[in-house]
Image (cartoon, rainbow, N blue to C red; front, side, top):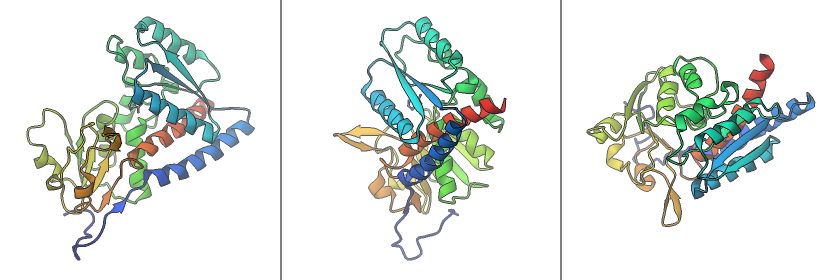
Length: 294
Ligand code: GUN
């Protein structure tokens, strides 16, 4: 039984989950909180580290900087050469870890292959880890403790909240088991009392899993991966993929066909993407508040 049964008349259109709209509301709230902190003499500060010149990363970093400016967060991008040694990158992080003006540190991924990404992410001070990628923060998340949570899965949770999607007891299928999206998404869903199935590149029969899901969440970076026949009638479909195909941005879901089956669906662009950025701003303010409370 799907959560929503909208298809009695066979015509009903799915509800589009507009991350763009929800993110704007969250940004308004964050901007007010930033103003409040500024009155107390604190300007939230975010440091972004960008290694190399990956065009997609450049775009994401620009979007993050622009969003910071919009809500009054101070942000600075540290652009580092692609050939930088891991030790030199760690030194930059150490400097930011001790800077009193910086409350959040974000290392844009992916890093060049010669750099030890795990060592870099583990070097970020846990209280400034606004991406929530440090193993300590990941551990807190798995245990259901309060802390800094990775922005994309947190943004998906906010979308569910905004559209009043019930989670308890639902069959959820997550496609993609990355540390950035799939694994933290799994933890958040499990902590919301959903039954969670997580699929990845070695899953033998993907469709067999996706078809059972009341809520299908996909984030692998493969355009057209999820076709109509893989989706249960009335399912909630969340597309985290961002792919460029012939100059157009598309997700991992065959949107035009899958929307005929879904009760709720996120568009790409304008779905999860804006939520990720809104959560980064929210996490930066949260890092400030956590520091104050200590
Ligand atoms: N690369 C792709 N997604 C992300 C993200 O959420 N944070 C960082 N730092 N890098 C990314």
